[in-house]
Image (cartoon, rainbow, N blue to C red; front, side):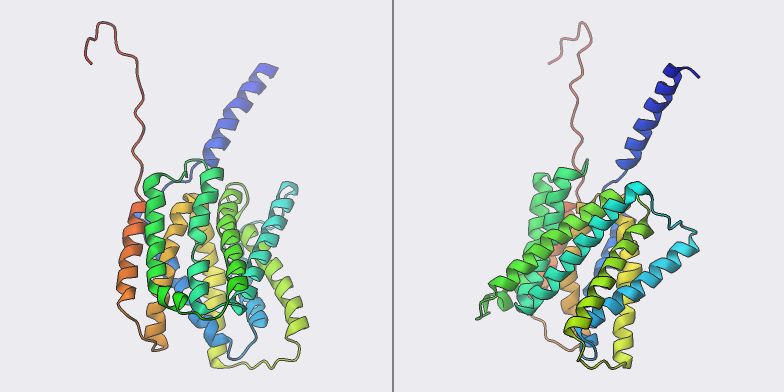
Length: 330
């Protein structure tokens, strides 16, 4: 084979690889419904965590959750006959992902100890906004247009409407906790984009296992240091909480989320996560008997309207074609 033919074959392969990388699209109706289902599942995560914390410390609950999630991912990978061999080019991205995951969780857990629940919800739920910012710069075809930015802000306004009273009535100084949670939200937004980017060239189960391994090791060590003397009781409530947070969220939920981020534009996927606090309030009312007010309906309406605006497809730009000779039209 001549050198020219080799170069031609390489040139034909490169556009195909680039095209594969840029296959992410706006959400389809089915994908959007699936993303909304995942957001609904995630809304029950704080309720399950709250129930589990009655019988286990937060760090122990954390690593048990990630162990169960890793088992689910392992079963999924074996069932689909995936290879666990890590290529040389994959080591650094996977290590960076694991570190990012661990630091983000550390900011979130520590920050929640220094602030109120209302502050935590309002600040943490900014992560879809940060996902949009990162995607604007790093993901081809996922730029934040004016309508999409406006829609995302309207949807976030729904979250603020639901939790504004608890946020405004706080009498203590929660600045440290809020700043840590804001850092966690920024890192989470960046992690969504990083996962989406890595998913174009690294298998999904490797990404999930990297997060699980780093999370398990970090939380086990921290639990041994800070929770060594705390009692640990295995109860039905704890088992159910771990099943929900570990199997359904850290396992199946993470698989579903990375599947979406691999195939669809990350900012379109995460904006539906702004519905999580709405569903969370409903779960708290249904399961824990907590009261809800009219602000829930206002917030839900804003989230629906804003999410719809953020998912609008932009109009294709018209191309200025040269006029045929003799065409006198204007």
